[in-house]
Image (cartoon, rainbow, N blue to C red; front, side, top):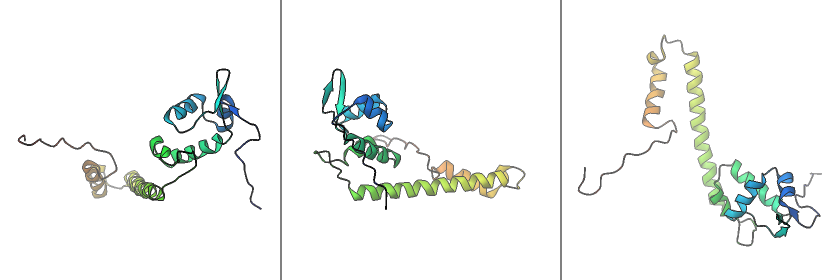
Length: 157
């Protein structure tokens, strides 16, 4: 029988220190997430913010989104105004494709490094494979983000 973990507590509301301790998210990040509209406090106990126990599940979803490479703005779009998850499957597919591209680039880089480490050529500059990798890096094909040159405006150039 699969184990089910209920991230919600039987405790009514959690103060910010409890949320930080249970979630592993620093209180400063919780305040920032609240400022960005990712989470919402339900009140205060003295000077401390109080959160519904359901915030722990929401924080787990935020952590999952961050681990997958989504920005906080993209993660914010994954929640409906009522706070319930509303995940656009097209956005998930686009991120999966982006990850596939990154994986391919990293694998090519790893393979190139392994080749360069084991290459029998007297100098890397004499190795045709290394020269091909070098040309790919110079053209921006190795995944490095190159800034495009500014386009001339009409009448300039």
